[in-house]
Image (cartoon, rainbow, N blue to C red; front, side):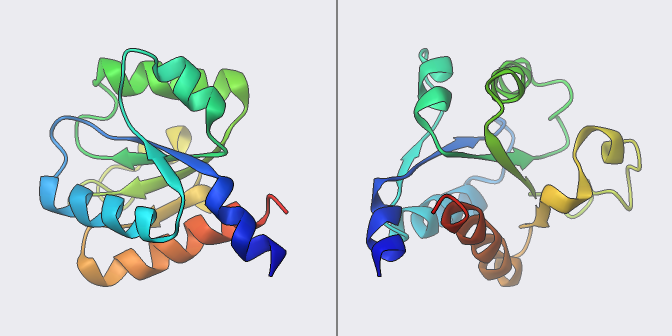
Length: 134
């Protein structure tokens, strides 16, 4: 019971590109907030927001390796050694289609989130990472 009530104290930082599907992003944000967590997104104070967060959810789309904003966020996450989960948001941009992504985004921390039916599994992985805090 303590873990369930304590999850409300946790903050998630959501990193995404400007090209991400806005409907998918909206559904993801709504579901994350339904877990009673605080969700932070891009701001001028992204370093501080990432430091405040327990977990970073990093949305991967076709421009992720060229997106300056996400690269800066990724660097902050790795420097602060924050927990991170990678979500593939585009079914045409995955390990299968772009094997070079395997070197950048570890398979064991990655979920597919490009269709509505994958959202529940992605949220389960996010919840699992949050519960490992306790």
